[in-house]
Image (tube, protein in one colour):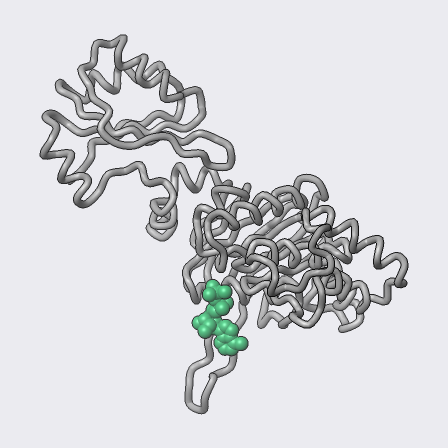
Length: 343
Ligand SMILES: Nc1ncnc2c1ncn2[C@@H]1O[C@H](COP(=O)(O)OP(=O)(O)O)[C@@H](O)[C@H]1O
Ligand SMILES: [Mg+2]
């Protein structure tokens, strides 16, 4: 049984003003999220991602369809049971949403107070959580004294207070610079690995997906237009939207001015060799070309790391024909493709 099963979910909001049209924010979404997944949902602004999050934690009812957590349909639970389910779901936000008037330990303690955890147990749990996120020394500080990355780590500690099995992260790194983004993503990866928490990561940034999500769904106008393992979507995106997102991370394909400059500078054909980790590597590709006596120059590209796996896109200029290149690479491994670069 999947940890979270979203089946044909629709969410329509009534018209915002008289005579306006209803807005369908989520339109027939189905996803299966397994226990222990870091499941990424990516899409542009307005795609319906945040709405989906609010439906998963039962903050809003679905218009139709169902959302099951551990096989229980949350949309059809009475309020009291729904509150219990919600307690098992932690949430972190783009703006951290810390209470400014409370110390760091006061913020982390807050959900425990609400849940009625006795004072003594609370203090021990808060200390443990702050230790986990590496902020024990900030226990008595206030949110405004912390960097954005530190504040989000407090947000994560608070979200973990009630020992949730699921953590929903809605644009949790979108307000952070690249360095602090890394620090927060590393922590989320630890939450997943060490605590076994299933994480749903909502983002409009593909590098976030590449770093921590093992699976990804691409949303556009309320629908999931593509989904699969992160590596598969990166190495073989099926839709134009997915390709656009992938290009923001995998910068190894020359285009525009870069391509024109390459054409100017190099004789012969420009070929892009792409390879996955199904047996191929940069060294094996170059070795095979050299052994076959192919006269080539590497002119563009490199190797990307997607979820710790290699994905290569190497553009070479060759004198001679494409057939020789293909023949040379035939024995290198599965997942090697050669395409002529189009101007
Ligand atoms: N409470 C609401 N009432 C009316 N329309 C809403 C509401 N929440 C979201 N929407 C609309 O639903 C669509 C999806 O919004 P949202 O889920 O916030 O997208 P995302 O998080 O991907 O940017 C948008 O067109 C938005 O204006
Ligand atoms: Mg949003």
